[in-house]
Amino acid sequence: MIDANMLSKALEHLIPATQFYYFETIDSTNLFLKTKTEIKENTLSCCIADEQTAGRGRFGKMWLSPKGVNIYCSIGTSLPSARQNVSGISLALSLSVLRAIKIYIPKQTLFVKWPNDILCEHKKLCGILIERYGNQLIIGIGINVNNRFDERYLQPEKPCGSIYELTGKLTNRNELLIDLIDRISQDLTRFWKLGLSDFMTEWEAVDYLAGKKIKMSIDKKEVVGFSRGITSEGQLKFEDSQGKMHLLISGNASLLSFL
Ligand code: BTN
Image (cartoon, rainbow, N blue to C red):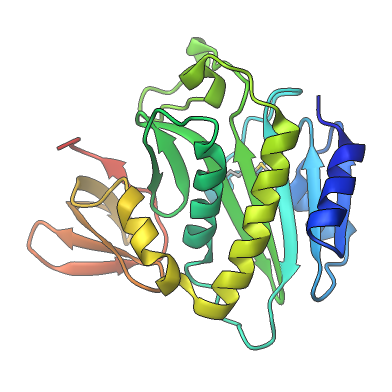
């Protein structure tokens, strides 16, 4: 069970000036922060739900959000006046999420698939959707915690998994949420000060695509090539089969070889 009272108190203690919202059911926590709140300067707004009826994923996809099992959390913040460029922020924050999840999956290796999916044993455990509205940033995090995926609905080309499926243990979502939000808050401050450059070594250690043969869509064409890491702005360095390097800002990479 999510204990909203306990969460609100713990967050107030850890991150003063946090606005906290909890819903048993909501359409989307990202949408709530966008449409129903005013994100004030120097504060974090945090919306958590036990179920989403219209969870939003990247590229307009939906994010499956069943009740009582997973984490659906959005954090709203406003950009510091000195930092209008947020490129790379989703990569930096995916590392915060990875570190928070890692505590519950100590035996397996976790990876980040550019730009911000967390994977374990080639299965997606978590997705991050960052939306910017002028000066406001909404960081939406969905983590598959205690659910079991119904085999009938799994798409073999997009394997998903949960912490429970990997470990056989149920995770206390309240503890994970507190740790997660604390890490995000600290890494936001670090990112505003130092940018993605400060996260590069950590990224390289968990880069799922590094050196792999992948397929990308460039100008609506499918191009095969190799992933060659990222730039300090968070672009993917993609070398096509002619040896030409492309710097990609966004996209969806499909792995063509595990070698
Ligand atoms: C992805 O497509 O990988 C990103 C998924 C992000 C889902 C989270 S769940 C909490 C927040 N609210 C939403 O509607 N979406 C994000």
